Amino acid sequence: MCAVDYAFPWDGLVQAFKFAGRQELAGLLADAMEREVRRAEAARDIEWILPVPLSDARLSRRGYDQAWELARVLGKALRIRCAARALRRPVDTVAQSTLDRPARSINLRGAFAVDPDWRDTLAGRRIALVDDVMTTGASFRAATNALIDAGVRSVDVWCVARTP
Image 1 (cartoon, rainbow, N blue to C red):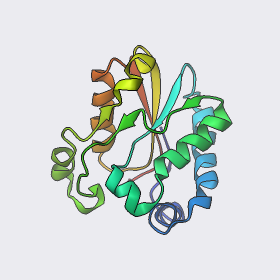
Image 2 (tube, rainbow, N blue to C red; image 1 turned 90 degrees about the vertical axis):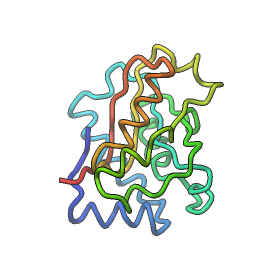
Image 3 (spheres, rainbow, N blue to C red; image 1 turned 60 degrees about the vertical axis):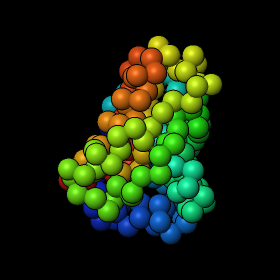
Image 4 (cartoon, rainbow, N blue to C red; image 1 turned 120 degrees about the horizontal axis):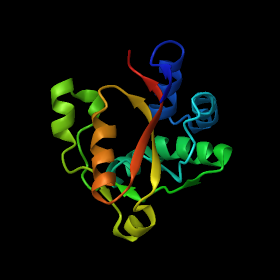
């Protein structure tokens, strides 16, 4: 489920939120996601909301995880539990936005893992995975595979914007 196309004016808002430190835009962007989630009844049976995480190195450079900012606002609005670090990104990969389509999947091999302390909690659960933009779906696929490998029952994908 994606709320909007990655086009004017949303592309500028997402870029400001992600790259220009405009964390206050999380509410606006999450509101667009919430409207679409409710319209599509996508939250039905979702037990946890998890962000597609940044690596520790990227988190340190950026200062915040934009996917977590979206996930926590959505979780509060939808009354669904959220976990910031249940899914980890132990590998500091090259930024996906710098890669072409074929390189994106290769870049993410082994990039995600479920924190061992969360495996039992998430096993058998239905998860919504949240990120800001979906271009090829490579990040969502890699993160979903890690969750399924850890015993998660199903994963729904929610993002603010998708590239047309």
